Image 1 (spheres, rainbow, N blue to C red):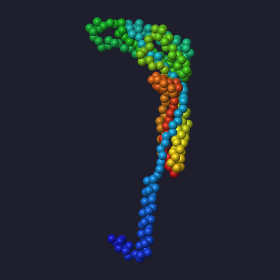
Image 2 (cartoon, rainbow, N blue to C red; image 1 turned 180 degrees about the vertical axis):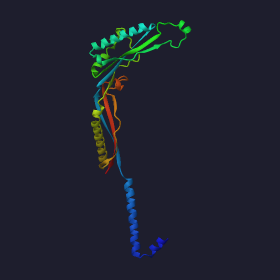
Image 3 (cartoon, rainbow, N blue to C red; image 1 turned 30 degrees about the horizontal axis):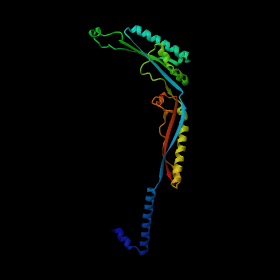
Length: 248
């Protein structure tokens, strides 16, 4: 109330100046709010892909045997392991590429009472599972030899049901990460510039950027088997960068 009375007591010219000041102040505040509410941005994605070849192969050859005499069964398994070593070394692998897997013995009648065991057939009581693991950087050799598993079967060696073949690993991701991120960023920027041209604007500085996650896939997923990246020698590395630009 005191302020209003003071304003009323001012000369007419000063009342007019004060009114203009208030009006301009309101305009600038309103204009600032308008400008803040009309900041334009565009969010674009940039994809980078690169074909790579696995540099390491890990191949587990698992075998099993069934019998009633545990000692005789183990001797048979030992003979099979020796035969597998001979097969692999004749195919070009070094002894240092091969090592034994752990031996697992299962007694089908474990926990049976003596009375229950009297009527049980003993010829298939014990199961031994083991095998060898091949680890090599010569992925082509592993691929070629793994396709000849039938030769081991013809020698009387029983391959386990869960045999899945070699897995192939690419260890060079760190060597290509930076260049792929640069490529993805360039592609995102090109997409942003095209959008800006279509919107009759100019691309401004970056507001936010998200590198994305690197993924490794099979290069040629033509069927269920080959779509499994671990079974593929030829792989494709992908990364998608998401960038938000200001528009000017």
